[in-house]
Length: 389
Image 1 (cartoon, rainbow, N blue to C red):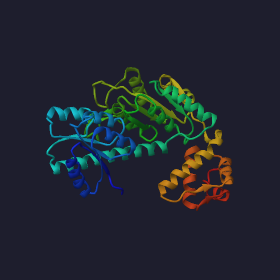
Image 2 (cartoon, rainbow, N blue to C red; image 1 turned 135 degrees about the vertical axis):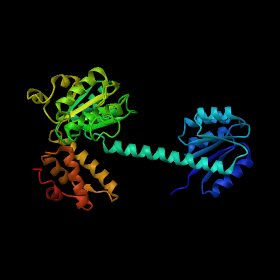
Image 3 (cartoon, rainbow, N blue to C red; image 1 turned 120 degrees about the horizontal axis):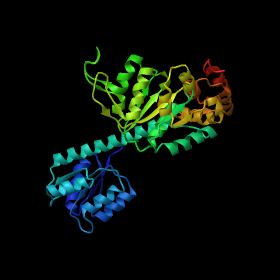
Image 4 (cartoon, rainbow, N blue to C red; image 1 turned 180 degrees about the horizontal axis):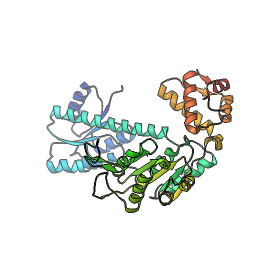
């Protein structure tokens, strides 16, 4: 693990020297600046894990350095001063400093504050890395005309609060469309709650969506918030809504009409501000005719309809998808990158993908496990899923 790098900004050379000796003993890499202007030049030229900045300095005081530095770096900045008071500390933290330490410096407090700041910054960076990894894993891959049209529609619809019904076969990536709508909306920093209506028994779906009060049924040993409440100010994604019971549909319809829900066993109305996205692999028009789905709910949900095409209707996307999946899978496995021969890609494009993109991912994962260095046409023929034809 590389050393963490700290910049010390102080016009007093003796203080810089003392701090350097202490922090180098603690195994940190140290750089120095004698004033604010020199410090900003260094911050612009290189990256630091943490910055210690004096407040009273010639040419540019520490408060101005703090304001300018925060525009250039995400490193935590700890302010130090021998002329400070509570007001100075509060003002520094309001402006974005991680903390404020008065001179003469308490060595133990300095080291604890420094370690806490570095740990917090490392955690934030790891969170960003994981979010990027999740985004990269769930991005929509493909340059075909249908995918281009879907992206354009998402770009147009996402900033609004319009309800969207996403249709398509299993495995086409309907949930990716829902996540893209949320991530590109004004609600992106609020929760994205996903409910698989097909996976929850009909007698439990109401409690899942609307919550319940303690004692409302045998196993309700405490109050529970439902997904509508948990998604407040965010997005609620109702996946496979065609499998929802008619009783639950009626309650969802009321929630959409009134922006209010009532917990199971409760009497109090609870206001909710939620954007609804729904998805189904069923033909809801047929379900309405058969009496399995409410027509009024369908019209509430389908302000915008996004139809995700099956993989067999966008075969030109298969090379991009296959290469992307292979890169991600081998990286997660910690093994050397693999490649496809042109003939292998042709063979993948000629398969009939009943399971769509999800099935392609599984086949590529199987190939990544069973093949070495290069994936050939024979490998595809041998290891493709038995149900593909």
